[in-house]
Length: 281
Ligand code: NAP
Image (cartoon, rainbow, N blue to C red):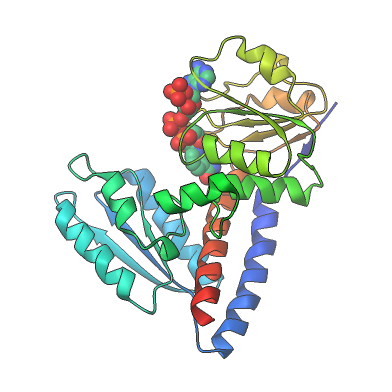
């Protein structure tokens, strides 16, 4: 079998087009969605992510501000900037690119962002709201996965869904979103026993491990939808957590690059639009 490729790049372009239209409508009511992105330090991967986010803002017609701060910035200074942005009416979404230098507490920074501007959905208030199923902002990567599933008419309802990875930003919220959509969810991690057997039961398998080629064809149920969240660099080349040979067994799969990655940034734009719409009311 040769799987259907789930094209995150094409879906992203479509959704960004819809967001641009809504931006124009909001502008007529005097509100232009605004996103502030903060980068502390010189992590090269973070610099690329921030550039891509700026580009996405431009495509969606958003106002954006970028703050590039030196590595030695103190936690107090960063919290001061966030406090200012919380008050800034032009800014509807605030994003502080992670990871932060080790002398700054990520938890303190996340908690300082106004939950109404927390477009990453990392603030404990928003995390709690996701848990109870009453949320405005959805964490961007899991949200992007859900949009891809919807686009390809893959309904988690009643299906066996397996997520490999239990991080706060991907694995756990991913499991919750699938559960809210009535999937029967198993979350696996590094201590899971018989991981391959569990994966083989999955109708929807999401890999968020951070290990190139971790999911091999023998771990996949024929016809399953396999979603590859992984972004790994091997010899300078970007590759996912799923071995490409899985496409011969799966029914659907997401490529890397061009699958979940572009959707993640698009969902950030969607959350910012949502925040701006709320401000307009
Ligand atoms: P993370 O915080 O490092 O979490 C990785 C998870 O994988 C952990 O829960 C870990 O288990 C589990 N794991 C590691 N080795 C395992 C093994 N041998 N067997 C089973 N589980 C194992 O990573 P993350 O932030 O969730 O990101 C995961 C991947 O997604 C990375 O490649 C990252 O770059 C990528 N990512 C992509 C996007 C995107 O937009 N496409 C966004 C975010 C992240 P333990 O909890 O037991 O340690």
